[in-house]
Length: 143
Image (cartoon, rainbow, N blue to C red; front, side, top):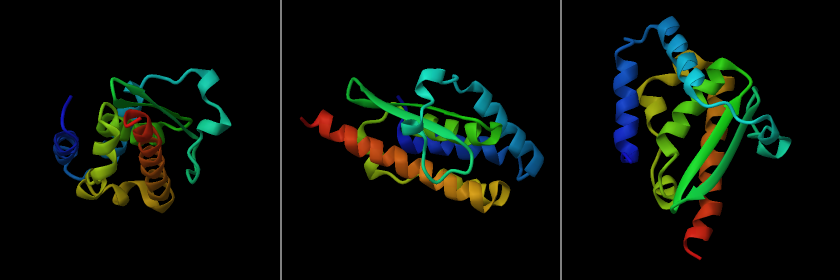
């Protein structure tokens, strides 16, 4: 499994190839969302909804070999693409790595330029929820 910084640097590199083109960037984010496996309907419940997102975002976390595995979905293509980036960065990391590292790629790719304030707030809520999940799971790895 790649290091959290390596994965973020890969994402920054991918987005740099789009040269700041708004339409290409949005299309790329939606393509990334299409690659995220669809969450089973039985898991798309109110208790798995991320609070603070305008779109519906469902997020679940579990431990597998002391690494956090995230499963996520959304009812909109762009938001599903955004959450897929977070799943890519944070899934497969230990709770400690998730808690002790910043998610810096959004700033480096200028994400706020093409997703707007509402989605930026929702994206921050997704990161917060993933860190809270990692914190809750860290007690299980240290038990």
